[in-house]
Amino acid sequence: MLDPPIADLTPLLLQKWSAKRSTEVSPYTLACDHLLIRRWMDSLVRNGFLPANPASGLDTRCPKPRPGVCLSHEQEAKLLASVTERIRLKLILALDTGARLGELHALRKNHFAAAENVLTIWSSKTRTLRHVPLTARARLACTQLAAGCAPDALLFTYGSRPVKKGSDFLKKLWPRVGFRFRFHDLRHTFATRLAAAWPNPFVVSALLGHASRAAMTVLHHVALSQTTTRYVHLQLDELRKAIAAMEVRQQTENTQAQSPQAQASERTTAHPGPENRPRKTGPGKEGRK
Image 1: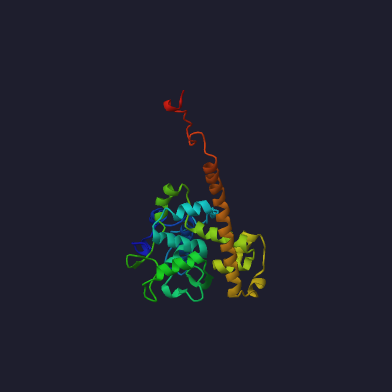
Image 2 (image 1 turned 90 degrees about the vertical axis):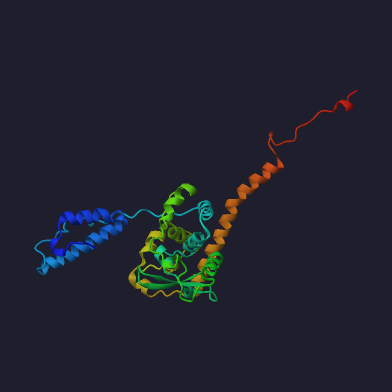
């Protein structure tokens, strides 16, 4: 991480490293890095390897997380129409499974069980597995991505290599779609739609893959004890019903969003404006007397 030996580290060197690191990661990740380095240096000081902690000046305060944004169906349609086919499939999986970007990049063909219509997602953040039933379009996306791949092949690659940083394309999308968003906002969109269609906090938490139940308080404003959550075991059928309810609700809202536009088009056709009405012509010379 740092070129000079540990004994040669100074507060100035660490501040320079921190300034460079701030251009590569989020403020929250930077604060976590600062805290880890400070604790590591404290242990070196306690054990007599360093006379003082050069990282004591690093800021370890975690900034308040930015509130999540839920995309509307109009924004989703505009977004999916503005990207390449492979990125579109990635966005669909994020919208319909709530998977994080790193979780999508870790997906392999054998994680997709076509017979059960389930996608197994490994979370490197919580070190857990979760099984997410698929919507019709998410199943189609997995089928297209897995076609012709080896059983253990990654579904998303850059050339033939694993994708390491795959969110840079979002900044190029902002001018085209007309709004700014983070990739993580697609996960917020999934959670919001799921909670609206199936208001069971345990189901929402299970499908999002949260290690704790803290998200339930955010989504449903309820407080449940750790003992209560320990005794709740959800069956896959319950998760299937929740995803199916979300899919039906999403189709209904899409239809309602499109119907005003269709009705306006029908009104324009049935009652054309003055500029579109046929122009009346008088009788020709041969009809005049």
